[in-house]
Length: 145
Image (cartoon, rainbow, N blue to C red; front, side, top):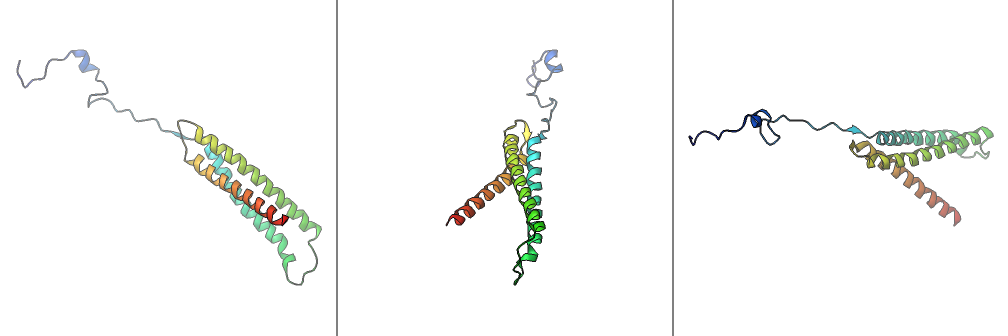
């Protein structure tokens, strides 16, 4: 046998190359989908941020006429009703943020899914819930003094 020639291999090995051979077929990994609860959490966070901006602007617009200097009259019944609606909207937005936080946690726990929207939604919703909770505690403590 010549030293320059490779040893003879069976025909079966040549027809079925394994993954360790350089001419084996490359199979790309499956593309991961985004987490459904994570996307929902992200959207809830964005919608609630927009809702907070709108409700703060609405409360300011309702109270602006009563904040002028020399105005001794209090808000009329329509203004009080408007502020009540804004307050209910704020409570609904906090509930949306709590649900968004839970969905963000669920979205990060799902395996074989992309987690970027779940992480961003979890951060946005959790920061909003924590900041509103801290504001509530601060104002309740300052009202008690």
